[in-house]
Amino acid sequence: MEGNVLEALKLLCVGLTTVFVVLLLIIMLGNSLIAFVNRFIPEDEKPIAKQAPSAISPKVANAIAAAVAQLTGGQGKVEKIEKI
Amino acid sequence: MQEILEKIYDMTAFSGIAENPGCLVMYVLAFCLLYLGIKKGYEPLLLIPIAFGVLIANFPGGGMGVNAVDGEGFVTLADGTKENIWDMSLPKIAHDLGLMNFIYYMLIKTGFIPPIIFMGVGALTDFGPMLRNLKLAIFGAGAQFGIFAVLLVACNFFTMPEAASLAIIGGADGPTAIFTTIKLAPHLLGPIAIAAYSYMALVPVIVPLVVKLTCSKKELSINMKEQDKLYPSGREIKNMRVLKILFPIVTTTIVAILVPSAVSLVGMLMFGNLIKEVGNSTSRIFDAASNGIMNAATIFLGLSVGATMTVDAFLNWQTIGIVIGGFLAFGFSIFGGIMLVKLFNVFSKKKINPLIGATGLSAVPMASRVANDIALKYDPKNHVLNYCMSSNVAGVIGSAVAAGILISFLG
Image 1: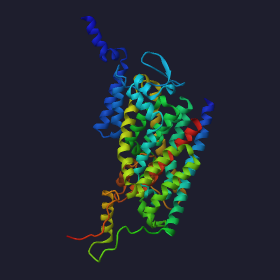
Image 2: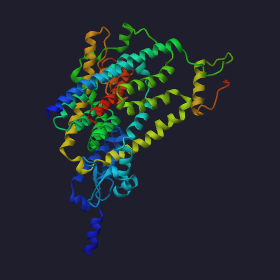
Image 3: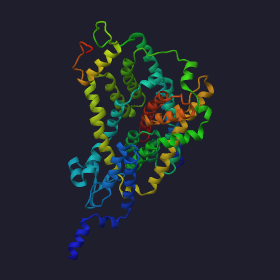
Image 4: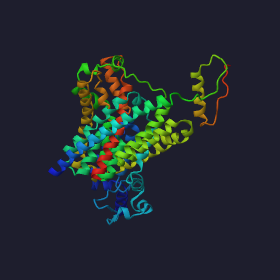
């Protein structure tokens, strides 16, 4: 029984330390990833072609494009958006 | 005539129930769990299949209960003979032991289903809040304290693998608890799964209780947005979409290098998340992972875990120990997260609301919602949901890593 307690104590130390180390590494690498992305890939590609000047904002156009892509499994593309 | 009546009596389950009245206790338990799942809405997707599994497993003669194997892997067949389960083919298991044993030994005992469920969980998880508040993820580690603290106590009453399976309930993650138990103490799968999911369903009761016992009004009123304004991190994320795609790949790599035994859980979690974040090109497999596969896995998991809870496997002192130990593990995990935040606050100018530590246990997103409700009671403008989600999601990774450590040391 005493052996069990000693083993449990060992697991307490090793286990908690490992969980801390793994999460710390994830935080550090997450920060590095953020720095990397901010520096080298700062912006997403624009998903749709330029629109003629209209009342439709790029945000709305992107939302429509995303919805169409979702519904058509990536097959459909938005070429033109017109107000009716 | 009497002979016919006797045969009819033997044909029904009445004779079996009369021989083993403990079945009645199992029916009551099944009805209670069904009530909690259906009427109260406590984790209905899992509690209802588990409860129904308990019910159908305990009708004598039904052959729907999972036959437990002994320490050497021998299972008792209907004619009383024993056979090693690992020498039996799947068709033979289905023929000799019935449908539920077939499902259990094919999908659960092999450890197939929990990682599949983790894939679905990953597909439904958004790491965005965690990436926006990355530092808070460390509190997901503090909330694993309950696992190891209860292991320290439980090892006096159980064998080490059994104690570890019980302690992992403190991770507040059903698939992780099931995966660990399958690997370390499969004979305790039923009660441990029930305890894990019941306590997860009771998060809205347990979290406020521990918070009330350990936190002051002043601490719970710490407004995270005001703290952010006072001490800004000075960093913005310019391309969240790319970051979200890279994150699961990098995390899997780190975990795979440090704790390879946790890869089956963390790897599948991150794979599910990756196919979600990639977008349109993987939308079909994302849909399969988060709907069809996840739902089918949940049904098989729930029913067969419930079916492991036969009278002999459930009505014993070990089950009572698991119920008590599981509650302590859960409570200590919340306590551990809160204490880590308090320790952090001693040394830091920027104060953190202890509720963010409390949500370090997995139970995503229920723990965060509960914590948000508590924060709003003390300050109606203090929305901590996004901050809590950071430690909450980190808790999922943390508990999977803890499970990997237990399996590598004790498996």
